[in-house]
Image 1 (cartoon, rainbow, N blue to C red):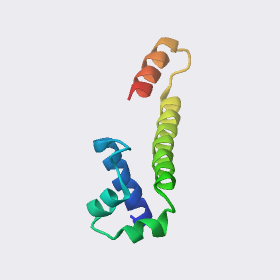
Image 2 (image 1 turned 120 degrees about the vertical axis):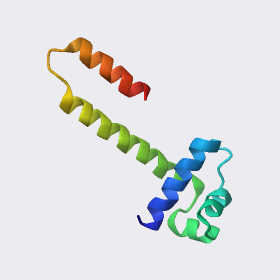
Image 3 (image 1 turned 180 degrees about the vertical axis):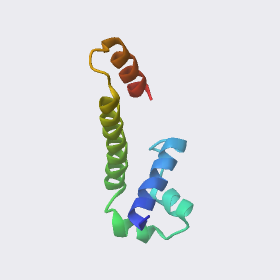
Length: 90
């Protein structure tokens, strides 16, 4: 995994553990055991990093929707509704 993706993954984990407000650039650098300057080499700001983290959630959700749609049985409306609701809740 390249360094930029490692930073995104680390930030995502910290945001899930602590929430966005309590996830700082310093906390990310500390968790990764790197200098904060490395963070700024890849991301101009925390907001840019958060946008990248959100992109990972969107990408995963779209992939899940595509998988759901590929497995959906046409005509099984009740089954489709049950499984899409479960997917959205996850």
